[in-house]
Length: 312
Image 1 (tube, one colour):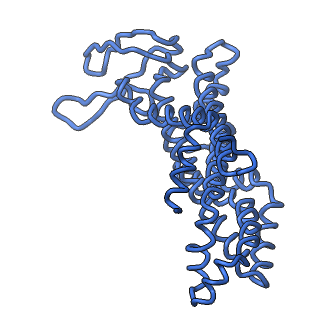
Image 2 (tube, rainbow, N blue to C red; image 1 turned 180 degrees about the horizontal axis):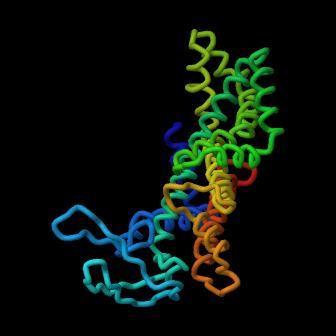
Image 3 (cartoon, rainbow, N blue to C red; image 1 turned 135 degrees about the vertical axis):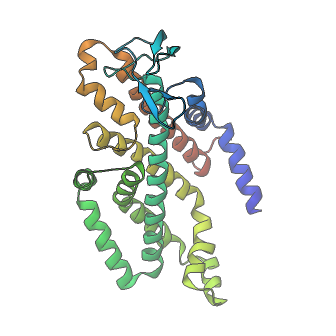
């Protein structure tokens, strides 16, 4: 019955227009991030590389600066070879191909958001489950820690930790975001656990001698899967925004390009004032569309999983 119920809810979700729209937009950008590099000859840093014959040395070639989208150019490489290339989204002020930067930047931003969402969700639900189920002193101590974390503005923690690190990989940024985004999850999961822990099926599990961890993860958690999934979506959305915020103020990854770092460099080089719209509009538009897609996914799931909002 449980499997049929989950399958039924999935079918309901796919019939929900809001969910389908959000899921379709998000899936498009995921696929674009995967196959996008196939349509360009440029590397992840927006440069064209060639290997010097007889060696393992690769040399970069810069393109002409601030070319508009769909411009064809003939590059003269270090070895004198001429290569015709197409700049789908033009180039920036440094002569880097913006399409390549956008595709690889999208990959980085999605990876950061997924990793941060997983870390924040796992940490939040674990603390929430333990606090809600155990109660007593354990609950009070954990909630005191959660309340302290909630009082401290997460953006301040993000800035302080990110500024302290000289070299920041996407994984490091994801860990920073994940470790500062879990408190509200813990409080929400705790409240749900408090409402479930005295149900009959939980009492029966105690009677048959199941351990606390087995009761939490085998009896209580399955009844909150839809809620946890929605929490994960919100974590993903928040991680996208937090990552873009850090990138925009110059505290993004130092070892990779991301959507936020593209925006940051565009503003730093006065792209808006000079009218180089192809530099800042695409990354900003993608971030906006991804956040919008996640909002519609959550809205659709709310209508599916909440019987009061469900429309058959």
